[in-house]
Length: 274
Ligand SMILES: NC(=O)c1ccc[n+]([C@@H]2O[C@H](COP(=O)([O-])OP(=O)(O)OC[C@H]3O[C@@H](n4cnc5c(N)ncnc54)[C@H](O)[C@@H]3O)[C@@H](O)[C@H]2O)c1
Image (spheres, rainbow, N blue to C red):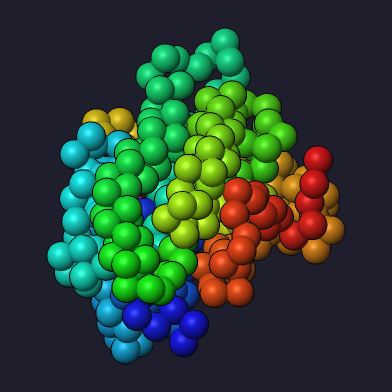
């Protein structure tokens, strides 16, 4: 129970990597606010955590809505009386080669991967400053954690993903700048860059491709099967990762042993580097 007494918020935790992160943090004693744009899956993650003896609360909603960030942060403060761990995970890929990429696609990718984490972190500033001051006045130090989810596409680029890669690179900039800004509040700010993790987002694309509903639009999920086969050949461990393995990398940044690690990007890619 390395996270006993901690309160965490995890965006996009209705399914995939986010659900595994929320479940892992809860299994280590954190009380978790579960967010997803899809209310049903968010409720399922909450019920799974509770069934395992943990504590969780749902905060459904679209992270790109301007008013969302305050509601997300306030849910943690009001339901669980604190805020110790912030995981910006919500996201999806809406891909095209540059000549076919619309302004709407471009801004959607920047909104979900960079603007939404920025707003959530901005909304958390005042409570985190207040808590750090109270603790300093009381003579003790509490380390808090931010983990932003990025991608190998954000670090190295990927064909067909100009907008996604830009959004994922932007959140690395947010991570490094905020690590410098929030050191004075004892907040560690890091990022995890995933390679190929087997989720809805990376399922083999076919006739029955899953569709994500984002606002009024439908975005097809998935990756071409030959691309998935190529990626598996290139990964030293020889396979895509599971959501639980992905969550493990995020967890490493949340534990007390990482209290002196900040401003870093950890690659969780089965050894794959470009
Ligand atoms: N799967 C991979 O190989 C991979 C690789 C690199 C990075 N990532 C990143 O990991 C994160 C999680 O992806 P995943 O693979 O678990 O995908 P997923 O589709 O299984 O899960 C993502 C979840 O985020 C939610 N979501 C999407 N947009 C949202 C919004 N605007 N507001 C609130 N919730 C929203 C979805 O409803 C979904 O439940 C994403 O940021 C993704 O870009 C994934």
